[in-house]
Length: 151
Image (cartoon, rainbow, N blue to C red; front, side, top):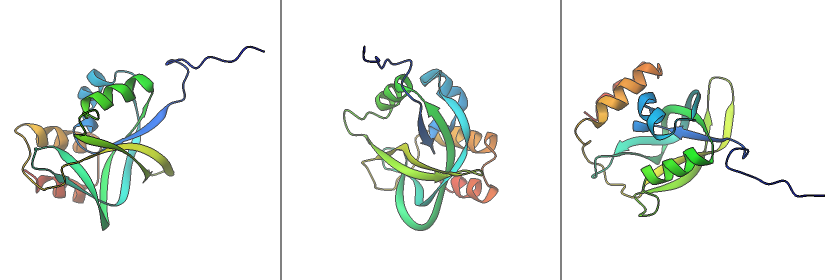
């Protein structure tokens, strides 16, 4: 019996949790045109911050929450995200997490964590994308207020 070939087109979709600029739908349409927004989601016991390079990241912190967008992505989108997050030079690392949406808990969800864990200030123009995305996704108002503290 011939073996089934796995191609880029027929590999199963993966879930990806975005909490920074990749929540921005117009930007994701450019970077990952086949990505589909599944829902919003929340990551428990992690905290959003901006590092000294001016980029968003997350770090484990008890009793904190990170809200964001849950995307379905295929291999091409995953490869594009790996390039965008500069995995090769270890600007970010790939991490799997469990996130909660309004409907269910999703396990083994891909996200990216910056290797630079020192808090800093955002790059010019970065936080407006995050704020616009948080508004469009209707993330909780208290969380949007928290994001504004990073302006």
